[in-house]
Length: 410
Image (tube, rainbow, N blue to C red; front, side):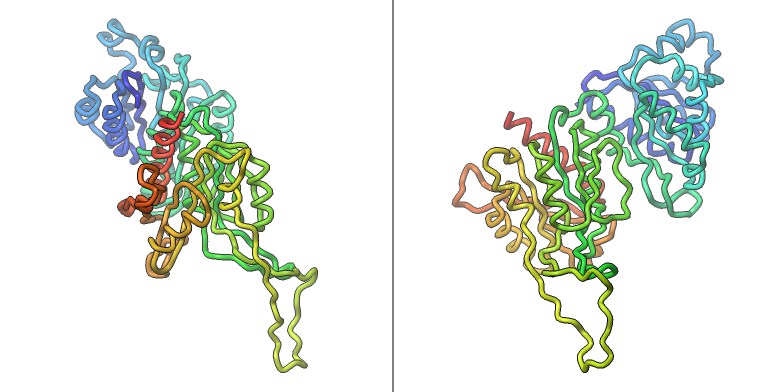
């Protein structure tokens, strides 16, 4: 919650400004006080009336409006706040922030503030990738400016790429983390992505996991203030900001990295770890033998160690909360409930990964949260169905549940 926290919200001129309205609504629901600054560009996308109505506060937009300056002034506006949030943060305002330009109320307040600043960048992917933008962002981050996003997705021009402003739920989580989130002081271990088990130097055994859900969970926990170690198998997902990354390839690599990360308060095993690996991996590419009637080599497999069960079964440094995933194609709840018992973990997130669901590699996920019934152990597990969410929303909801659980157990 953000009860009575003072947020100075700067809305700059990007089409993502429409999301700022939902952000204001979320801040107000959490008890925050919102003072909005609307730039001239921002006013092209949202109106002062809509912003003021949702914020329940007047909108500031003119550096040289004498009444505002006499009553509060840009210096007081910049300092009588707990956090300054810029959402959306366009390439233009990032450049001005990085170079100390103060040519309107928003940039003057940013230059005058001595409070923490959180930015939510939003722009075309080519602008985001531009060397100048990278340089400006690096300078701002070196000066302590916090960032959330941008995300990959559909952009205003109809293109697909990096540059989409983070969703309001993620910005809210980052705000809570910046102000001392509910997972502050908590150490979290998250596994993500597939593992690759080499057959020879060019072939391997793998699965269809993209790492999207695990990476989203790591980011969500970090935004709530947790110190997160993310152990990821090969994935094209961007490393979430604010987490300690450990990149691995095989299941054995992942196990070693997880044990090295202990002790932690919570372990979330979202990776799709290969159950088996070749007993021996060839040191050279296996060639077809055209002289043989059977060209397929015999592939002997051995079982990999179970990371989830290993973490749940630790004696001296078992995490307070161990969470696994059960990706199934049939009898999802039955298999997941059995897995909860056999692995010895506390929660299982069960999801259907049948080909027609699009879960593997997709942006959405529908899960059931299965947990042990401490009050009535003989009654079987508790099963809670969640609506279909984006993987980012699933991650945010899970992070909030983790905060509630660890908080009540403290």
